[in-house]
Picture 1 (cartoon, rainbow, N blue to C red):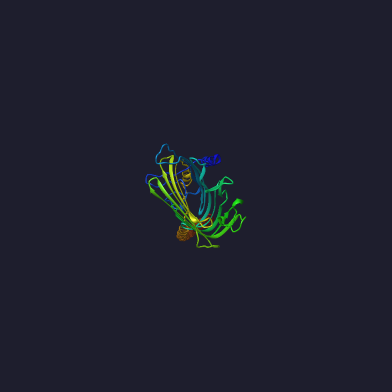
Picture 2: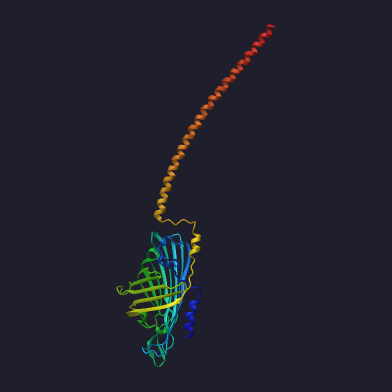
Length: 397
């Protein structure tokens, strides 16, 4: 029991807590690349964007002489949701870590866990056309502690039936395909080549048919198929957002028509700067686990604190022009070529005018030289005439 409560507290205290705010128009402010924004993905701020949210939620019910009846209960839930997203030119690299743990204690019963999730996702994309990305993604999902079926009690061992533990099951998937991201509010993923491993590392649960295992003693089950993912987030009203995620997986190797389906809906309600409420619903179907739809619903009121580095990234990009698309770059290149051709014609015209000026200046210089030579010859003749006259006068004398 103490271990479970400590685990919930450790998740809360792992680092600073983050959340989201809503502006006066009812739009969520940008505290995460995954929150509602109107800004196109291909204009995301360059560099690392770090954000997230931690929350601690406590529920309690107490009854004394209450004629309608009831059971005293206590519940503690903690979760963190961090994102580390990098944008560099046309390359995007998004990483998400989601950890959650919760315990509940009803009067007369031991503490039992009510929530237990480890979910880590990393995806890379290269924009080949506006809003379209060649993409590759990987995901790991499991839980922290053992899970039990509290409807099955073993009188001999005095324990409930164990049905899960860390990496039992554990899921690891890797897929490639195309993502469409017109905004962070709407995302579609089509990955036709996706490998999926289901790990069962607890030896006591390595039994044929358990989580899809083919034989007793197997530690994993392999699938290869297609993945279709979608996300849509919008505001229900001021300070209330609704985030929907859907994932569908079809196994090419076995009954591809029987698809695994996972849906998560999260309603975030911001009460004030430090207090928020959240309601979640999870639907899951995987016939390798159980041929029935699994359902989980939670609601909690908790304390949160906001943090993000958006303003720092904005300051870094104040003087940076937006990154052009391929079409914009080709258009700019064509315009530059036209300007270069026009400039070349102007240069040719200027050179022609300069040559004409030089030719005119050369002709004038030749004329001036001729005039100077003629004047010199005339001066020489005058000197010779004067000299002859002086010689004649001297002879006569």
